[in-house]
Length: 267
Image (cartoon, rainbow, N blue to C red; front, side):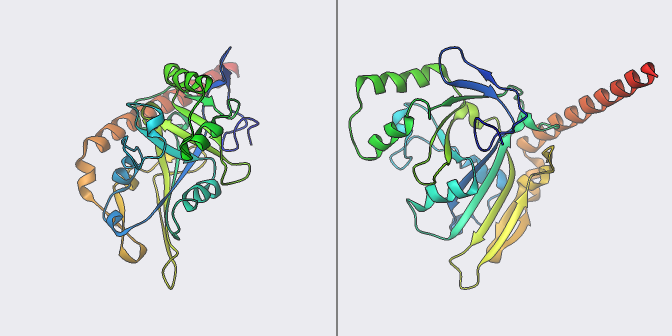
């Protein structure tokens, strides 16, 4: 476990900003838990994941803090994500997303290769600003300057202390950072049923986050069954991911050949 964030790889290189609590690094797992309802049936993982980037509107908790920004809320663990949801909605029908920064993968599928840029709002006490916002309390001039400074820094996301799960960390992603996330897994649990049901769709596997692109075209059907929408194979997203993945394979193969060449030269 990293000494920076609980969901961060301990072996990953970290670059620190000179003046602000900003880090540039990679190798994360992020979790998001949402209440499942019947309208989600038939929607592909690709569609469901896109819905995690929320428009600015009255029911999007903290979007008013950052004008003109779409935001997405993630956590460091399934436990933190569930605690955040259940503080607002009492349900056991849950959809839990597990995502990662795509550049982490040995075989990326997105056109972004820079590490995540994260403002550590824990050092700034940002959870207190969110508490004030939740309770319609006013902000001091210093707090308003802090909010403006965060926007000016253009981070990918903002980390802040969870008040719902002890030791937990939440991450508020802006659209720029959200575009760096790839789905690893989506889990469905229908816990409000008399006989609970569960199902899981994988989009990446193994410690290297090896992509399974067809997973983005899979969907949940009633009784926790899994279906596949073949039209996804004709989508622009699938074409883009496939081309980038093929290039990733080629780069990896070239690197392996070069490694073997150097090894043979030494001996």
